[in-house]
Length: 98
Image 1 (cartoon, one colour):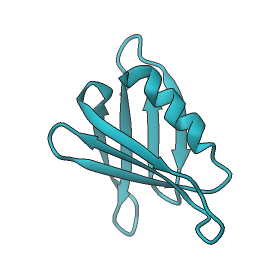
Image 2 (cartoon, rainbow, N blue to C red; image 1 turned 45 degrees about the vertical axis):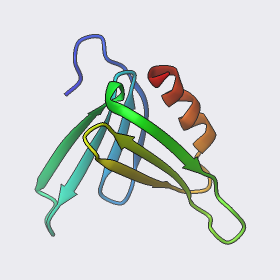
Image 3 (tube, rainbow, N blue to C red; image 1 turned 120 degrees about the vertical axis):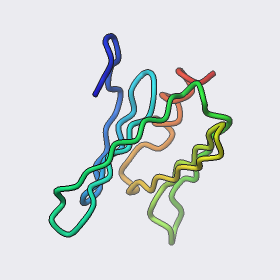
């Protein structure tokens, strides 16, 4: 699903789904249904990001969050475990958005 010259920067997996950060876009892989045979792929180019933000893990909230808002009104929210370097993800995204 990658285009020529596109490189994967980071990839994260939940129990069933994945989010892939490339140097051109975010790819969300959504596994659906009980059997997991149906899979949808969504591509969100960095060129369409209006803004994004992060929320780091706290004392009681052990998850970090990344929120991205796109020009078409789509809002993506990703929850990451506390072991994930959310500031590193933010830094990587900034290289391709700004």
